[in-house]
Image 1 (cartoon, rainbow, N blue to C red):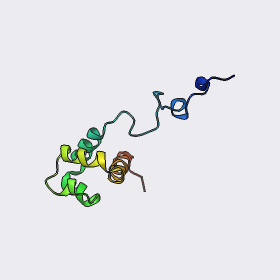
Image 2: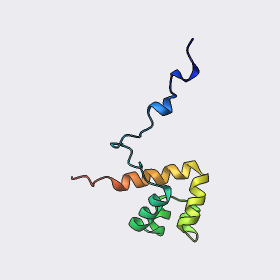
Image 3: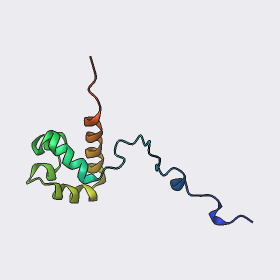
Length: 92
């Protein structure tokens, strides 16, 4: 008879713990992402690119963290912008 623990869950098999992770967000906190985007674009440009109140009305890292942690669709947009901003510029 097989025990329940003989097969590890899928998440444990592919935990992404290898040092060669291809995930561009690997090892970054949401705070680091917001801070880097703010340094690169500024709050005004972030508010234009992603229309969310925490970037347009009295923006701060703290208010952005609170909102983005509770709002998955907005967090996805911020993470996607960060990933796009880290790609090398295409040569034409």
